[in-house]
Image (cartoon, rainbow, N blue to C red):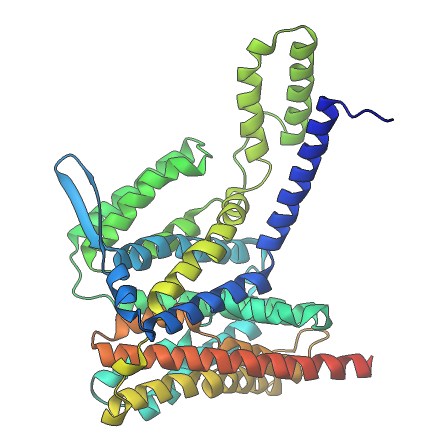
Amino acid sequence: MKRTYPAQKRRHAQILTERALASLERFLHIEAVSGAVLMVAAAVALVWANSAFSESYHLLWHMSFSVGLGEFVFDRPLHFWINDALMTVFFLVVGMEIRREMHEGALSDLRQAFLPIAAAMGGVVVPALVYLTLNSSGSQAQGWAIPTATDIAFAVGVLALLGKSIPGNVRVFLLTLAIIDDIVAVLIIAFFYSGGLEYSGFAVAALGIIMVLALQRMGVGSAYVYVVPGAVIWSGLLMTGAHPTLAGVVLGLMTPVTSVSLREKPLDALSRIANELLGLEQNGKTDHMAGPLKELRRTQRELLPPVVRVQAALHPWVAYGVMPLFALANAGVSFAGVDLASGAPLWVMAGVGIALVLGKPLGVVSVSWLLVRLGLCRLPPGMGWGGILLIGLLGGIGFTMSIFVSMLAFTDEGMLAAAKLGVLAGSVVSALLGLGWGYLYARKDRQRA
């Protein structure tokens, strides 16, 4: 009989654990899964808000939560901490995505990016015009920016459901379009949905930015050190009256795209440190390993640029924590609280839904067609007009960003609920139309091949 020793058992268990964790990590980075989690969170919120337990739903998000140090206490409802604090992390990831694309991605070459940038602008302007056509007066017009946004995670997640049958250029085009949408959304929030600004807060935010620049100048690479200056920027923007989540975008755009310069190449340093640790172990000097291990951790960290390393680390937390929690806290619209008979809420809901479902693809396709027709641009290799239409349809998935803008646009509960319903309905219909057309597009592509 073969005997299994305790050390072998432990090693076998360790291997199984490592494999399970690696599989879990790969699973957490699948975009289609994160999109599904987001949808489930929104569905739970809708059911909860319209069930017999609806009161508990609203009481939960209005529950007070405070942080403080000594006599200083900052008290806000849970809803604030999710929408104004946690969503800063979401905007941080958005900012880093924009920074990466500007450095080495689709936005690094303006000639190559001109068509998706122009298509994105069409996907912003046309939905806004469609909405204003139906809601041109009074407080209803405040919601014009709601259908201009695209939810990157949700849209790319739906595209991922279509598999590898969709050309890779479609995904790149969609990502570029969604990133431009996010840039425009950030600018809209900053310029159109910030109240009367208290300019003293900008001095506090500027202090936080100076702290970030000083740390970068000193060569500090640990992301945790930047939490304090990030909090200073966030506090400054909160004081100004601008939306504090913009602090995430500021930090994301300031994240370095190159690693800290070391005296030797990271791979050479890793080899040297490994040999040094091996020598210490062989000589029985394990108590002297603290220094080399510290240097090893620092060298490993600098193998990847901060903008890549931090974004990869935050992605699972944002995709499976921040965004589903935001959906759970904000998608719970009570149908009983929406009075569609009064007219204005009905037009708001219809305006948002129609602008997302029809306005987005109309804007994307029409501007792309015009530029190609005029000879100013060419379609990416391997992608026809069917791919452009697919991108336009998926661009109508506003969801997270559109709900976010809705809460800035409307203070009236009835109008806000109607806008959210329009976002939810428009995003779901856009996703279904995108999946349906994507399936037909992929099948036609296979037949041509």
